[in-house]
Length: 127
Image (cartoon, rainbow, N blue to C red; front, side, top):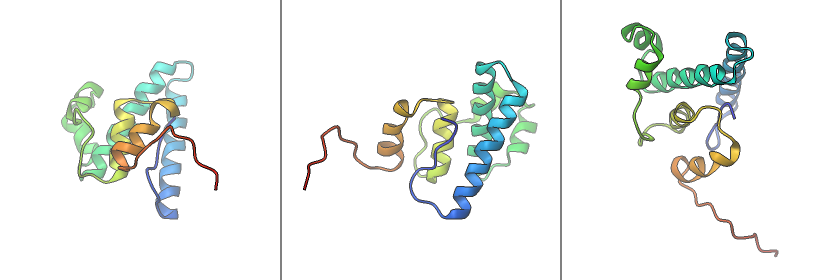
């Protein structure tokens, strides 16, 4: 997975986030064509920048302040899923912490920790 949009959003937000995901992926491909680990690191940094911008920090200022080093940007990120942020910011944090996860590896966290919904393995009963 490249990105997740937790919960319902308006069309403009959906389109903006979808375009961002496509642009980020294409950039990762250009920078690291045959290197999946490089792509993963590129997307990790892209999610960190989006997280920081969602929290009122200019990604450019953060990069300049931290001398553009990915490990220092990582150090500026919270160590656990932030509470009280908007859902998109939490999604960017989650995909910074675990870039390019599988759907099965992330859906429970999105549902239970970000959307505050219950997940059950119980079958749906027929009416």
